Amino acid sequence: MRHRKAGRKLGRTWEHRKAMMRNMARSLVEHERIRTTEPKAKELQILADKLVTLAKENTVHARRQAYAVLGSQSIVKKLFDVIGPRFQGIAGGYTRVVKFAIPRPGDSAPMALIEFSVRGQAEATSAGSDGVSAAQ
Image (cartoon, rainbow, N blue to C red; front, side, top):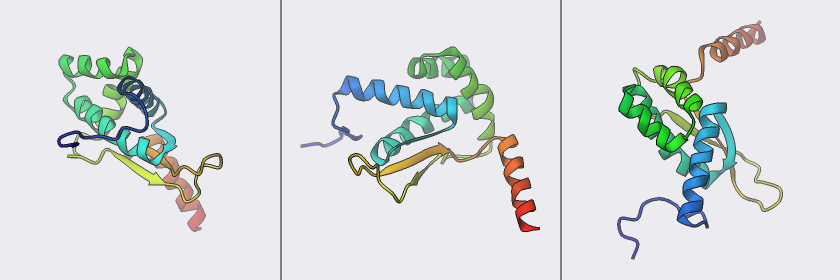
């Protein structure tokens, strides 16, 4: 029975899953959006939302907990100084998973894009200016 055993196995051992999720979390914080398979993206969403919740606290203890997952001071600094303040007034839903219509060519795996739901100010203003010029 699988009672109280949350999470997807993803066809990997526990150690491999843990390492893969840590690497994907690092890439997500660094690039702010990554392309991966749909089950991996849904599993990463859980971890990423917990990291953003830690970043909103912005305490030394929260930074140490984030460092335990991410393992890089520069990525932790970006998480707490850039990404965390974006979500100060938001209670949840920090990431979104966008499913692609076309599966991966090699094995037909369903693909998805995972990104932070609130983008940076520079990207938001450039997207807004593109929308204005396209409307004219």
